Image (cartoon, rainbow, N blue to C red; front, side, top):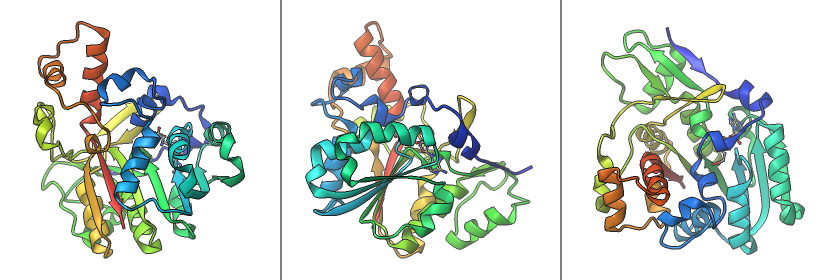
Amino acid sequence: MAEVNSTAQFHRSAPIDLMKEFTICESFARIDSPYAVALERPRSYGAMVGDFLLREGLLKKGAAVCEIGGGYGSLMQGLLSEYGHLIDRVYMLDLSKSLLKRQRKRLAPWSSKTTSIQADAHEMIGAISGIDLLIVNEVIGDLDTMTGIDPADIPEEAAEVIRAYDLDIPSCESFCLNVGAIRIVEAICRRNIPAFLTEHSSDPIIPEDMRYLERGLKLDSYPREIRLFKHSEFTIRFSHLMRAAAACGKTARTGSLLDLLPIRRTGDMRMIFTSRACSTERQEIIFELLDHIREYRWLTIT
Ligand SMILES: C[S@@+](CC[C@H](N)C(=O)[O-])C[C@H]1O[C@@H](n2cnc3c(N)ncnc32)[C@H](O)[C@@H]1O
């Protein structure tokens, strides 16, 4: 029977350890991170996101930026360290009181322009206004996901979004639908807020020059469960989000997170991944990172 997976109670009340979740942001939180060996030049994740936002014309002088689900505050710290001169106001919205506290500590040098808001993105997003850029990094997989949907007996809540955006679904196997993520995209479009989102995908895109990363990877599947400490998150079918944004009249662009990070495109990276040659710690780190990051996508909505 179909059910809704919600992580709200976990995020509201549990002590959250992001190191157990291996987020890309935390992997590159500092420039001396062990994963920096995979980069052409060491840079924090927040700075790399800033480079991308600037290139895409999403970060402009005097911007008011809102980050939903900012975790330890590492992305925003990196972004402000590099591009703080462009950002006038910062709003950090999170469900977790303890993470908001950690974010405030991390963002103390910018406290005069930072506001923390404890709220659920599902409820709050429709009320956000006066924002020039919304950042939602590795959060949408935590939002409500309907699981175990029988294609012959689809609950109305799922049927409504499938109809509204003409979403493809499997014809006979039961499947999961990222209802929360689709609703967030819908709200972002309605509020007219330029947005940048990333997440683990169920339909990854691999850059042309890194095709070797496709090995053993499902490139066109439906959301799957990722079991984590005391909660589960789900991979995101980005093609569904693209359809929702397009149907709302917005421009949605997407790609691999590998486009955003200057990962070294060298023969030894290919060799480590394809031969799984992990005889040194450096090789193990590179293999682990490539195996993880290849499933991630970014999405911008303007
Ligand atoms: C997987 S962590 C990602 C943290 C950080 N963005 C990163 O990339 O490392 C998910 C974050 O989203 C927050 N979160 C989860 N569900 C939320 C919701 N419904 N509303 C607001 N924040 C939420 C969590 O408290 C946490 O900060």
